Length: 344
Image (cartoon, rainbow, N blue to C red; front, side):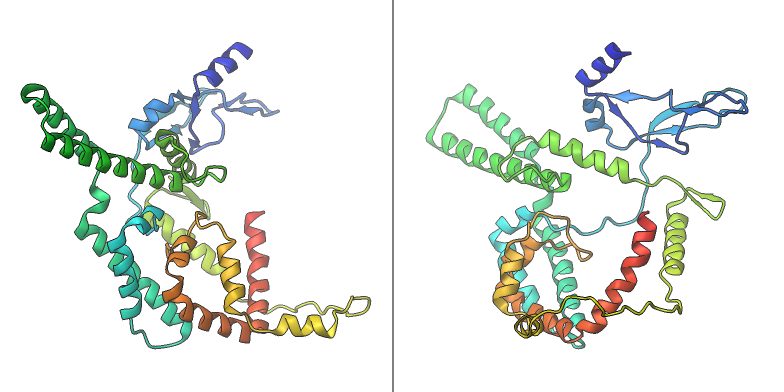
């Protein structure tokens, strides 16, 4: 067994998550025993070509083993959520356009709604710009093919000054596209110990796909019914959390102030002061911009790069949140309680 485990480690065998059941064997006796004995181990190279491979157990019927099948299964969950990629900030045209998108949005309403509307308008405009410029569709393979044609021509006709200049231009473009691809997969992999400049696109790609495989939901048991269709799963999840987070009347505990330490008047004044631009700037710039983005899809790198344009909107919203601090704190505490219940 040790030799087998050693072989699996050396071969980097990937054990895919098992869907439908947790175990593949049972002794079928009164004193029940369960184990996962049957599984597929795949090489990382296979998963690079077939990233949507899954293991699924089948009913065991008369046997004490569940049959296990492996197949590529692509589930359509609808449009993919928007995620801002850091390398877009390197495009000068995009930076100029994004500043214009933010300033041209004239939303009317509460400050929170204005901030939301400007982020939404920027996201829609950014998607259109990406499609029109086709910047996301430019793969390294296109440049590699051009380089091959150029090298073949040079071998046949000899190198000229124009061919050398064209080759230098293509090499520069190829490096740029490889760099974009590497940055994109590194960001999607969400590995904390990596830094800008680390180069292993295949590794980033495998980690990102591994995260997607582990997070995929192929079926869900809700109120005794097994759901497999993506739309019914989404509806079931929505109904569950809508009911779970529904406000209910309950008697809140009253805390006694006896024995509590008190802060000084100076500390009280400092806590009640409004957020300054310097404080917000310091907090933002001490956050890692590569962290997972928020619900709107923009990460902190986007906010840092466009801080001059969004600072006023951001600070106005911060002032409103501060003015309603008592209401915000009570709402926050009410949401934390059920969240901890769900996470166990």
